[in-house]
Amino acid sequence: MMSVYGWVIIATICGPFLFSFDKKVHFYSNWKALFPALLSIGSIFLIWDSYFTENGIWGFTPDYITGIYIGNLPLEEVLFFLVVPYACVFIYEVLIAYFPTFNHNKLTSIFAFFFTFSGFTFGITHLEHWYTATACIISALLTLGFYFIYHVKWFAHFVNAFIVALVPFIIVNGILTGAVTDQPIVWYSELHIMGPRIITIPLEDLYYNYAMLLPIIGIYEFLKVKFIRFKAN
Image 1: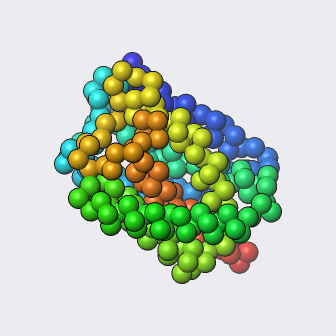
Image 2: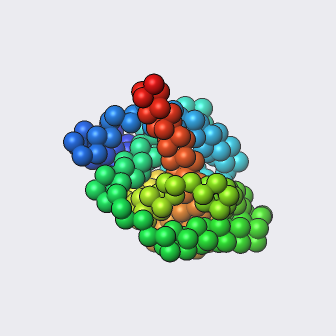
Image 3: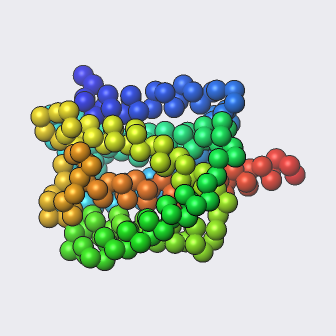
Protein backbone atom coordinates (compact mmCIF):
# COMPACT_ATOMS: atom_id res chain seq x y z
CA MET A 1 0.00 0.00 0.00
CA MET A 2 1.25 3.47 -0.87
CA SER A 3 2.50 5.48 2.10
CA VAL A 4 1.51 9.08 2.85
CA TYR A 5 5.07 10.18 2.08
CA GLY A 6 4.87 8.20 -1.18
CA TRP A 7 1.71 10.04 -2.23
CA VAL A 8 3.45 13.35 -1.53
CA ILE A 9 6.29 12.29 -3.83
CA ILE A 10 3.88 11.25 -6.62
CA ALA A 11 1.85 14.45 -6.33
CA THR A 12 5.05 16.51 -6.50
CA ILE A 13 6.40 14.91 -9.67
CA CYS A 14 3.22 14.34 -11.72
CA GLY A 15 2.71 17.88 -13.03
CA PRO A 16 6.37 18.72 -13.76
CA PHE A 17 6.94 15.38 -15.51
CA LEU A 18 3.82 15.57 -17.70
CA PHE A 19 4.46 19.19 -18.67
CA SER A 20 8.13 18.47 -19.41
CA PHE A 21 6.95 17.78 -22.96
CA ASP A 22 5.32 21.19 -23.39
CA LYS A 23 6.35 22.54 -26.82
CA LYS A 24 7.47 25.92 -25.50
CA VAL A 25 9.46 24.57 -22.56
CA HIS A 26 10.59 21.18 -24.01
CA PHE A 27 12.21 20.43 -20.66
CA TYR A 28 12.80 16.81 -21.67
CA SER A 29 15.45 17.97 -24.15
CA ASN A 30 17.62 19.11 -21.22
CA TRP A 31 17.43 15.86 -19.25
CA LYS A 32 20.98 14.95 -20.27
CA ALA A 33 22.17 18.06 -18.41
CA LEU A 34 19.66 17.74 -15.60
CA PHE A 35 20.20 14.19 -14.35
CA PRO A 36 23.98 14.45 -13.78
CA ALA A 37 23.28 17.64 -11.77
CA LEU A 38 20.55 15.93 -9.73
CA LEU A 39 22.61 12.81 -9.06
CA SER A 40 25.84 14.60 -8.12
CA ILE A 41 24.34 17.12 -5.70
CA GLY A 42 21.60 14.70 -4.59
CA SER A 43 24.27 12.18 -3.55
CA ILE A 44 25.99 14.77 -1.36
CA PHE A 45 22.70 15.71 0.27
CA LEU A 46 21.80 12.06 0.85
CA ILE A 47 25.07 11.61 2.74
CA TRP A 48 24.21 14.72 4.78
CA ASP A 49 20.67 13.40 5.30
CA SER A 50 21.91 9.96 6.35
CA TYR A 51 24.41 11.42 8.83
CA PHE A 52 21.80 13.68 10.44
CA THR A 53 19.32 10.78 10.60
CA GLU A 54 21.96 8.58 12.25
CA ASN A 55 22.59 11.29 14.86
CA GLY A 56 18.92 11.96 15.62
CA ILE A 57 18.87 15.48 14.23
CA TRP A 58 15.81 14.47 12.25
CA GLY A 59 13.91 11.27 11.59
CA PHE A 60 10.78 9.71 10.11
CA THR A 61 7.50 8.55 11.64
CA PRO A 62 7.01 4.86 10.68
CA ASP A 63 3.23 5.21 10.19
CA TYR A 64 3.73 7.41 7.11
CA ILE A 65 6.41 5.48 5.20
CA THR A 66 6.47 2.09 3.46
CA GLY A 67 9.21 0.63 5.64
CA ILE A 68 11.54 0.12 2.67
CA TYR A 69 14.96 1.56 3.52
CA ILE A 70 18.11 2.33 1.58
CA GLY A 71 20.72 2.42 4.30
CA ASN A 72 19.09 4.27 7.16
CA LEU A 73 16.83 6.37 4.91
CA PRO A 74 13.27 5.52 3.82
CA LEU A 75 12.86 4.97 0.09
CA GLU A 76 10.56 7.99 -0.06
CA GLU A 77 13.27 10.22 1.41
CA VAL A 78 15.78 9.07 -1.21
CA LEU A 79 13.26 9.80 -3.98
CA PHE A 80 12.68 13.25 -2.45
CA PHE A 81 16.17 14.29 -3.56
CA LEU A 82 15.35 13.51 -7.18
CA VAL A 83 11.73 14.58 -7.34
CA VAL A 84 11.83 17.96 -5.57
CA PRO A 85 14.89 19.30 -7.44
CA TYR A 86 13.40 18.04 -10.72
CA ALA A 87 10.22 20.00 -10.02
CA CYS A 88 12.16 23.13 -9.07
CA VAL A 89 14.41 23.08 -12.15
CA PHE A 90 11.24 22.58 -14.20
CA ILE A 91 9.81 25.78 -12.66
CA TYR A 92 13.11 27.51 -13.49
CA GLU A 93 12.84 26.52 -17.16
CA VAL A 94 9.13 27.37 -17.40
CA LEU A 95 9.80 30.91 -16.16
CA ILE A 96 12.66 31.34 -18.65
CA ALA A 97 10.50 30.04 -21.50
CA TYR A 98 7.46 32.20 -20.75
CA PHE A 99 9.09 35.25 -19.12
CA PRO A 100 12.60 35.39 -20.63
CA THR A 101 13.13 39.11 -20.04
CA PHE A 102 11.90 39.25 -16.44
CA ASN A 103 15.18 39.97 -14.67
CA HIS A 104 14.73 42.48 -11.86
CA ASN A 105 18.29 43.49 -10.92
CA LYS A 106 17.30 45.23 -7.70
CA LEU A 107 15.25 42.23 -6.51
CA THR A 108 18.13 39.90 -7.37
CA SER A 109 20.62 42.02 -5.43
CA ILE A 110 18.36 42.28 -2.38
CA PHE A 111 17.70 38.54 -2.49
CA ALA A 112 21.42 37.69 -2.74
CA PHE A 113 22.31 40.09 0.08
CA PHE A 114 19.52 38.65 2.26
CA PHE A 115 20.62 35.03 1.88
CA THR A 116 24.28 35.89 2.39
CA PHE A 117 23.74 38.11 5.42
CA SER A 118 21.00 36.07 7.10
CA GLY A 119 22.75 32.77 6.31
CA PHE A 120 25.99 33.84 7.96
CA THR A 121 24.16 35.53 10.86
CA PHE A 122 21.93 32.56 11.71
CA GLY A 123 24.71 30.05 11.16
CA ILE A 124 27.42 31.78 13.19
CA THR A 125 25.07 32.67 16.07
CA HIS A 126 23.69 29.10 16.25
CA LEU A 127 26.81 26.97 15.87
CA GLU A 128 25.49 24.63 18.57
CA HIS A 129 22.49 23.80 16.37
CA TRP A 130 23.87 21.48 13.70
CA TYR A 131 21.04 21.92 11.21
CA THR A 132 20.95 25.70 11.55
CA ALA A 133 24.71 26.12 11.27
CA THR A 134 25.25 23.84 8.28
CA ALA A 135 22.21 24.81 6.18
CA CYS A 136 22.54 28.56 6.74
CA ILE A 137 26.31 28.89 6.36
CA ILE A 138 26.41 26.69 3.24
CA SER A 139 23.61 28.71 1.60
CA ALA A 140 25.47 31.95 2.40
CA LEU A 141 28.77 30.63 0.99
CA LEU A 142 27.07 29.44 -2.20
CA THR A 143 25.43 32.83 -2.74
CA LEU A 144 28.72 34.58 -2.08
CA GLY A 145 30.42 32.40 -4.66
CA PHE A 146 27.85 32.29 -7.44
CA TYR A 147 26.56 35.85 -7.24
CA PHE A 148 29.16 38.10 -5.64
CA ILE A 149 32.35 36.43 -6.88
CA TYR A 150 31.51 34.69 -10.18
CA HIS A 151 28.52 36.88 -11.16
CA VAL A 152 26.76 34.04 -12.98
CA LYS A 153 24.30 35.28 -15.59
CA TRP A 154 21.53 32.85 -14.64
CA PHE A 155 21.28 33.89 -10.99
CA ALA A 156 18.36 36.27 -11.61
CA HIS A 157 16.39 33.42 -13.22
CA PHE A 158 17.23 31.25 -10.23
CA VAL A 159 15.88 33.92 -7.87
CA ASN A 160 12.61 34.11 -9.82
CA ALA A 161 12.23 30.33 -9.74
CA PHE A 162 13.09 30.05 -6.05
CA ILE A 163 10.48 32.68 -5.13
CA VAL A 164 7.77 31.00 -7.24
CA ALA A 165 8.76 27.59 -5.84
CA LEU A 166 8.07 28.85 -2.31
CA VAL A 167 4.38 28.06 -2.88
CA PRO A 168 4.87 24.32 -3.55
CA PHE A 169 7.70 24.34 -0.96
CA ILE A 170 5.29 25.44 1.76
CA ILE A 171 2.67 22.90 0.65
CA VAL A 172 5.02 19.91 0.35
CA ASN A 173 7.20 20.66 3.37
CA GLY A 174 4.14 21.66 5.36
CA ILE A 175 2.61 18.22 4.76
CA LEU A 176 5.91 16.51 5.61
CA THR A 177 6.32 18.43 8.86
CA GLY A 178 2.83 17.75 10.21
CA ALA A 179 0.55 20.49 8.93
CA VAL A 180 -2.17 17.98 7.96
CA THR A 181 -1.21 14.80 9.85
CA ASP A 182 -1.47 13.83 13.51
CA GLN A 183 2.31 13.46 13.68
CA PRO A 184 4.97 14.89 11.38
CA ILE A 185 6.13 12.59 8.61
CA VAL A 186 9.58 14.11 9.08
CA TRP A 187 10.41 15.25 12.61
CA TYR A 188 13.26 17.48 13.81
CA SER A 189 15.17 17.51 17.08
CA GLU A 190 14.56 20.80 18.86
CA LEU A 191 18.21 20.67 19.99
CA HIS A 192 19.46 21.34 16.48
CA ILE A 193 17.10 24.00 15.09
CA MET A 194 16.59 27.65 16.03
CA GLY A 195 12.88 27.25 16.73
CA PRO A 196 11.03 29.61 14.33
CA ARG A 197 8.80 27.81 11.84
CA ILE A 198 6.88 28.68 8.69
CA ILE A 199 3.58 27.12 9.79
CA THR A 200 5.12 23.73 10.78
CA ILE A 201 8.29 23.99 8.66
CA PRO A 202 11.57 24.75 10.46
CA LEU A 203 13.02 27.97 9.07
CA GLU A 204 16.23 26.05 8.31
CA ASP A 205 14.40 24.07 5.61
CA LEU A 206 14.30 27.24 3.51
CA TYR A 207 18.09 27.45 3.59
CA TYR A 208 18.54 23.70 3.15
CA ASN A 209 16.45 23.66 -0.02
CA TYR A 210 18.23 26.77 -1.28
CA ALA A 211 21.63 25.17 -0.65
CA MET A 212 20.53 22.10 -2.61
CA LEU A 213 18.94 23.89 -5.57
CA LEU A 214 21.58 26.56 -6.24
CA PRO A 215 24.46 24.17 -7.06
CA ILE A 216 22.09 21.92 -9.02
CA ILE A 217 21.19 24.86 -11.26
CA GLY A 218 24.88 25.74 -11.47
CA ILE A 219 25.89 22.29 -12.75
CA TYR A 220 22.78 22.11 -14.95
CA GLU A 221 23.59 25.41 -16.66
CA PHE A 222 27.25 24.46 -17.05
CA LEU A 223 26.33 21.15 -18.72
CA LYS A 224 23.72 22.79 -20.96
CA VAL A 225 26.38 25.13 -22.36
CA LYS A 226 28.80 22.21 -22.81
CA PHE A 227 26.22 20.18 -24.73
CA ILE A 228 25.28 23.16 -26.93
CA ARG A 229 28.95 23.75 -27.81
CA PHE A 230 29.45 20.04 -28.48
CA LYS A 231 26.45 20.04 -30.83
CA ALA A 232 27.71 23.11 -32.65
CA ASN A 233 31.02 21.39 -33.33
